[in-house]
Image (cartoon, rainbow, N blue to C red):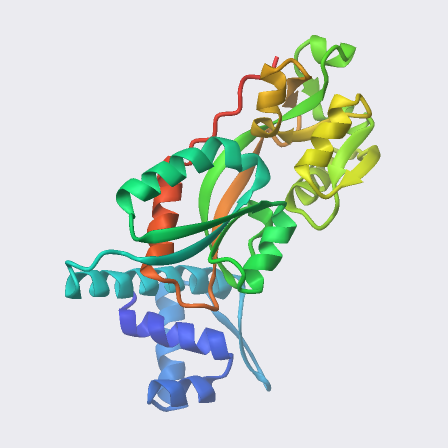
Length: 302
């Protein structure tokens, strides 16, 4: 089992990508640090770094370990702080970004629970598309952000948040939506309203199209969920979207949806934090609370 010392040494080397710089920061010598990393690689059974004349660079396994080690060491620091200050309430501001389609099912309960359980934490809430939230997180404008799973970056600490079923949605009365499930291959050939390539759902759909050897027939590209709903309700196309996005419009009779077969049945969402900034106890507490309540209802498609 790797020791905390080994993990910390690995993390510093992975962040600065130089054994000489890492050794200086850790108060050791490069040869001793290299020996510790070699021992860690032997214990884990994988190569953690590529070595060249410019330094050391994490492999895919190294990047994955880097993400896990950051979470482990952050949790250890938080535990130490809580033990040392058992009576101190968690307090501070937390800037949270949620995918727009997650707001209705998650935000009301999150706000109620946060007021009851984290009364000294001030939530600042923002909704948006995944690409916008990823940029805001990278720019330090957010402490936490929900992103489509494929959009998490190496510099994020990303933990699974929830999954929501995808459906084919369109205006109520569309004949195609009256007869049960539709295959992804058929749906891909319909006039589709899709997100621009800045956002994670578009990448997921294009990946599924490549796997199925089909092309997406794009009628319109949008940068907001409101635009998607407006175009759907006007009968100007169809959309492959998470069910929560169209749930309320379906209940009101404005839209209809059917389940999707032969393609991505669900969309996975992660909760991401920037690994570049030290996470506060307040941000970590909100992250735990959000994961606890993240069961996303979406209504049953026909």
